[in-house]
Length: 325
Image 1 (cartoon, one colour):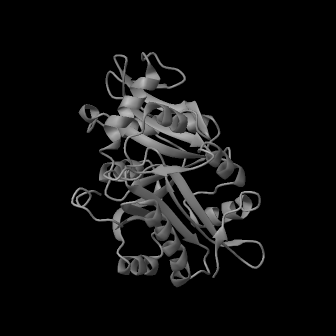
Image 2: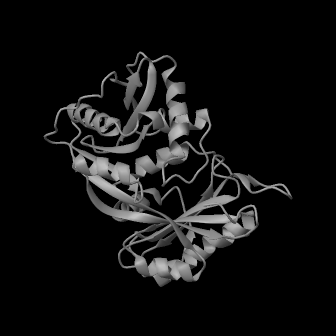
């Protein structure tokens, strides 16, 4: 199976169909274009003689089929907020593509990452392809995390009562001072406790672009839990191409407010508000060892579907990097 560089002029529609068939939720060509529009138009990867790889750059490859479809897609990238030295990657294939056919794409991404000077190659692999995982393990890749996808129907829901002293709001309607900055600080404090989080905490501008101003983001869908003017919890959702479906991106509660049922009550409140907007289905993802959030989602009626493994391969092992990940 041959591959070639991704062509923006033609490949977005077939790529959207491939990713919708292999991913946790449907995506459209317009959504993919919008995501790419937020990225720098050209790459700039660099490293000092004594420092790890930094900057931004990516490669995208596709394997076209006989009828104009894409049989496989592979991409590797480095974003400015990615931990120094790391390059992320993704390889997906349609149902009829074998793991052995995908290996040349994986090798091409590794070659690109090595040429760029990366220390580690992070990968993402659907968890329903164990044979591909075994082949990657033979090539030196190890499993770093298992992210599970979940879906809930926002039908009949129990009442959402906040814990004593808590007020529910949104980023669009809140009495908390400097709410965007407060939310950013909450994200920074809670991301490190998330077993599925691998990147470095983003700076404020990047966080704002992704959480508040990104594709599908709505300030009135960033639901907050507030105590005495302080934002102590958040659950953020975004729209999809289907107005009846949303994606819940993140839920976080400050450490001192955990074990009080706040995450469950806030997510339940968000589900009520989303249902009032006409949303009927919510999608989310949770790392398999994030047992508290799995328990919360299960009580809210989420059912578990296909997920993915995150893999890591050391490209330039050094004493400074050996303990990471």
